[in-house]
Amino acid sequence: MMGWRRGDQASFFYEFRLGDRVPRDHLLRRMDVFVTAALADIHEQLEPYYSEIGRPSIDPELMIRMLIIGYCYGLRSERRLTQEVELHLAYRWFCRLDLDDKAPHHSTFSENRLHRFREGDVFRYIFERVVATCMASGLVKGEGFAVDASVMEANASRYHGKAPDEIVWAQPDRQTRAVKEYLAALEAEPEPNPDRKPPKVISPSDPCAAWTAKANKRVQFGYGLNYLIDIENAVIVDVEATPARTYDEVAVTKDMIERTDRRFGLKPKRLAADTAYGTGKFLGWLLGVGISPHIPVWDMSAREDGTLSRVDFRWDRRRGVYICPNNKVLHTSGTVHAGRTLLYRASKLDCDACPIKERCCPDQVARKIPRDVHEAARDQARRLMRTKAFLKSRDERKRVEMRFAHLKIHHGFERMRLRGLSGARDEFHLAAIVQNLKTLAIRALPPQLSARVA
Image (cartoon, rainbow, N blue to C red; front, side, top):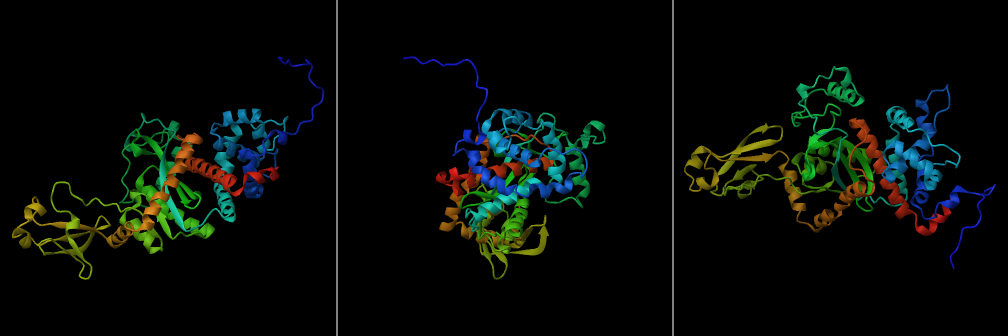
């Protein structure tokens, strides 16, 4: 028979515990034990950035817990995040808010992000606490790392880009926080880097973002999200923000590896990456610090016009010369070109009398072979490419790519909300914190133990 809801009058008294309404296996309940440990001394960390007088502020732990919820469930708008915390019981429980407690106003997040949290580098601090927890839980092996970068669209219109010399930064409407950060970085740079080309187009609203068309996407302004992960459980051991340029992404990898060694005592035996990291300079640096580069070599020496390529010339390591297919010797003057290349030249007399000149250098007086100053490191990387360990690393490298895919699909993180390199660092640190917390919740805390975390 059909049932009917009885009673029109509400009860006068309720016995209600917020924690009883949150399922024992809920993700936030499983993450809470690790968040509580990571934020245990957050007040002491931020105390120097608060005034000793005046009205009490919003609890910073509450705001950080709300931000963790936002980046976990794709609620990156503080206005919407506040509304959801007001309504969602599990969010209230995680934030330690009772039923009659009001969530902070959305404007308080911007004030604290741009001042106290950024000045105290609090997101970096929390990220490192979470990594230390992953290590203590046995999720970090430290034997193999993988590195990669993914483009995140900047909060800047791709239709309003201009050449750098067309923008008058002195205009009052240009003096935003992101612009001031960009100009300060220009002043702090001692001298231009010859290996780094100046940008052709920049955004007036976010000049730190790079004009890029990576990953076969539309041309846009973007930032590079750089992840360094431990291959064993895909734990993110370091994260950094750069403009979406390959040069910057490769350069910052050195900083991430050194920082991971300095902060956690983690130094991998091997590093897996894609071809963008296979430059002679970076491969030489890795071998110099004792890390095996499981990285395809970036090699553009192959020719497509039918003439002889560099691989057709034999390198004599003992004499330090190239020998051509006609057994003639190519020498170098020792001059380093563009800071990284030696030119080995054949004799004009040898080339004039050579029977295969038309196949070798038909448009040149004599054949020239460029050689990277780190070619020995490139040769060693090529030898590693033929090993079974390299094939294994090639497959394991996909785990860092899966981190990016998961972030964009399940967390809705495809476009920046904050501007400037500092804003990108804040957002990327929060994203990495959430992804590591989820790894801890899934791998370090079995479902049957979640009932004890109440």
